[in-house]
Length: 398
Image 1 (cartoon, rainbow, N blue to C red):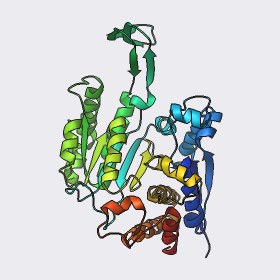
Image 2 (image 1 turned 120 degrees about the horizontal axis):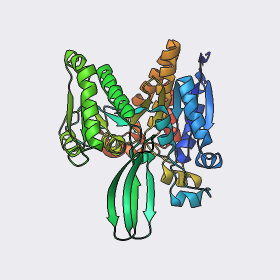
Image 3 (image 1 turned 60 degrees about the vertical axis):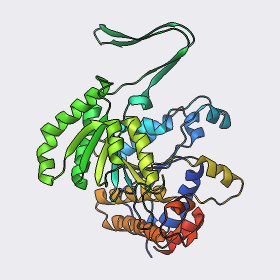
Image 4 (image 1 turned 90 degrees about the vertical axis):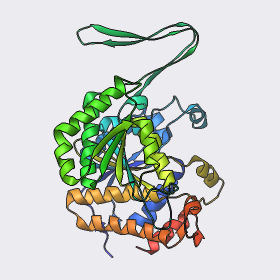
C-alpha cells in the first residue's frame, strides 16, 4: 500500500522521559507505515534546551509560525531537583510558556470520551471544553526572595520617563515577591478565540475570574471579555442559541460540578492549567484530553496536555514495560495531521487521522486499555495492557 503523501511539513517538537519514549513508538508503529511523514524536527529535551540557552525553543516557535502547524511532545520544566538530576547550567523556563507567549495563543482542551469509561462526576454527560489563556500571569513572572525587612514596590516607567508607583508591602522580615503582567491585546485575543471556538462547537461560554478581590487585574479581564462579546459576538451567539456567562471563578467551580457539560469554560492561564487537569482526570485520565494552542492569526500547535510521566520513566529505565496511556500523544499527532491536511487540501491525510482516532477509541471500547482507565471502566476491562501492547492493538485495527 502506497504511503499518504504530505504537501507541507509540520513542526515536530520532541520532549522528555516516558512521553519521549512513546513518541518514537507511535511514529514507528502508527504513523510511518501509513504516512510519508514530512516534519521539521526540534529536540526540546531538557538538556538540549539548557545547552542552547532555550534558543531551540524559540526556533521551534518560529517554525510553528512559518509552517502553520506544530505537534509537541510533553517536556520537563525544571526545578531545583531537575537541575541536579540533569546537571543543568540553570533553572530552565517552561517551554510551553515560551511557545504560548511567542504565538500569543489560547489553549483549548477537550476530553476524549469513550462509552465504557464513566466520568467521576456523575452529572457530566457531555464534554467540557477548557479554553485556557496561554499568555502571561505566573508563567511569565518575575520573582524575588528578599533577605530582610524593607519596602516592596510596584513601579511602572513610561517611555517618557514618568513613573507610576505603588507600595505592595512594608516587609518586616524575609519573604518572597512576585510580579505578573498581561496585555489588553492578549486578553482581547483570548476572548475572541474563545468566542469563535465556541461558535464553531455550538456551545455556550462560561468565564470566571476574581474581580471582587483583584479589581484591576481580574477586573480588566472581565471588562474586556464583556466588551468583545457585546460588540462582536452577542448577535451571533443569540442566533446560534448559545450564551456567554460570567461569574466568579469559585462559583464557576461549584457550578461545573453539577452541570451536565456541553460548554466551554474559559479560564485565565493558571486557572486553566489546574482545572483542565481536573476535568481530564475526572473524565478518565490526564491522557484522555486533546490540547491545541491556537494563535489569533490561525497557527496551531497540538500537544499532549499531561506531563512527562516521570515515575513511569524511572521504572522503564529499570527494564519495566509500563502501562502508560499514550492516547493524548496519539491525538496530538492526529490533530496536527488533520489540520495539515485541511490547510493543504489533502483529504486522504484528514481521513487517516480520523481512522487512527477511531482505531484508538475502538481499542478501549473493546475492553483493552492501560491501567489508568481501569478504575472508571464499566464494564471492567477485558485486558489491562502495557503501552507497547496497547499501541500494537491500535495498529491491528488500522
